[in-house]
Length: 282
Image 1 (tube, rainbow, N blue to C red):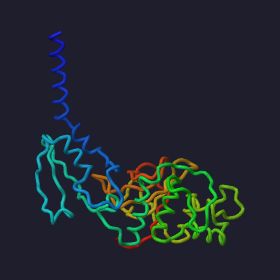
Image 2: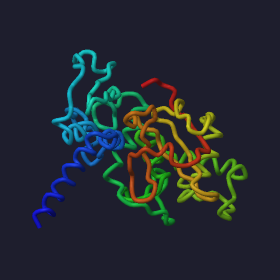
Image 3: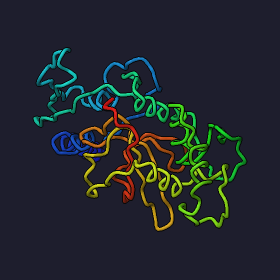
Image 4: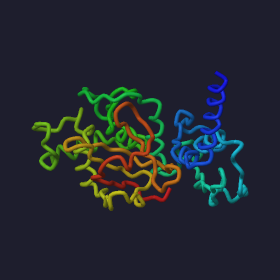
C-alpha cells in the first residue's frame, strides 16, 4: 500500500514536470478563445483583456514580464511575456466596437455596432416563413437567420434592405435566382435569402475579389462575406473590428445555427463572395 502511495505521488509530480517543461502550456495559451459572455455591447472600456488575463492567471508563478509598455505607446506597441523560458509576443490590444472600447462614429462603425448589439439578444435560429409588415418588417428579434443579422445591421444606419431589395426585384425579377419557384417578388422572404442578397449587392456594385483562399488580408471591418457550406447551402456574415488573437484576421458577426455569435469563422468554409459597402476608413 505504501509503495502504491509513493508511486501515485511520483506520477503526479512527473505529470506536473512534463506539463510545465513542454509546449503544452504554450499551446493552451495560443488556443484560448475570447469569452464573449464577458463582453457587453457599448459597455465601458474593460480593464485588460480576458483572452490574456485568463491565461496569465493560470500561469501566475511562471510568468515574467519582459517588457513594460508605456501607457502612451500601448496602442502601437506589443507586449512580451515569458513562460518557462519561451517568449510569447502578444498582439496590440486595439480598441474595438465589439468589446465596447471604441465608440461607433462613422456609418461603417454604426453598421458594425448594429450587428454587435444583436449578440446576446438573438439567441436562436429559425428560417420559417413569416408574414412581415412592410416596410421595416422583421421576425422577432430573439430569432432569425444569417440574413436577418445583415438586415438589422443596415437598419442601424437607416437603410431598409427589405424595401430596397423588394423595389429592385419588382423591376428586375428575372435577374434574381429562381430556386424557390416564385413567379413574383415576395416582400416577406426575398430579402432573407442569401442568393438574393448576393445578386442585389452585385447589382449595387459592392462586390470585390474573394482573393486567394486562406488569405484574409483584404477582409476588413464592415465587409460582408458569403461562404458555401455545401452544394446548396450558403451563409453570410459581417466582418467585425476585433482580430482573432495572434492572427491578422477578424472575428465574424453572424447567426450560423443557434443565435448571433462573434466567432473565428473566416477559415471555416470556402468563401464564394465578398462585398464592401462602406468606403470610409473608420
